[in-house]
Image (tube, rainbow, N blue to C red; front, side, top):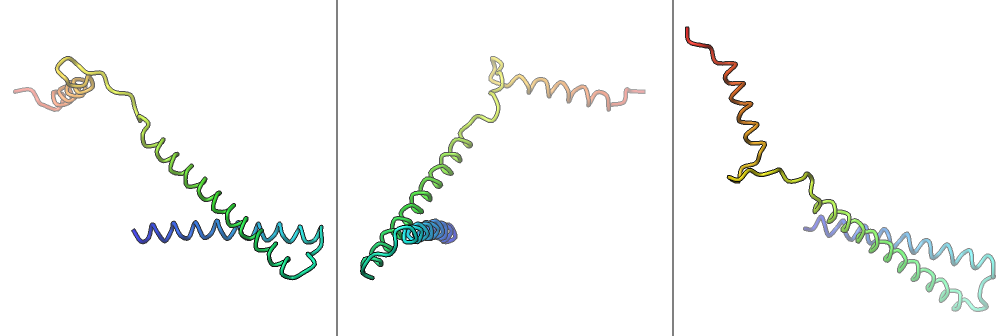
Length: 115
């Protein structure tokens, strides 16, 4: 249980930190094109907004990824792996009789006739 929660937290932190780096990169590119704001407080506010938006973006990517993984796992386990075997009127499958007759023939080939 703890290992699962630890992996859950690591993935969430990883995606959020990637999103924060993306947000900071976009903010840096914006500063290069438009120049910095007039006061340092405004600059900090703008950087904080972009980093916060990046964390939210990372969180959204993580939620989508987990949803797709869960859906893929659900769909792959609920498919029928093979078609159902035809049944005889007594409830046994048709392949059971084939297997039993093969066993009888193999056994008959191994048995030595009486001398």
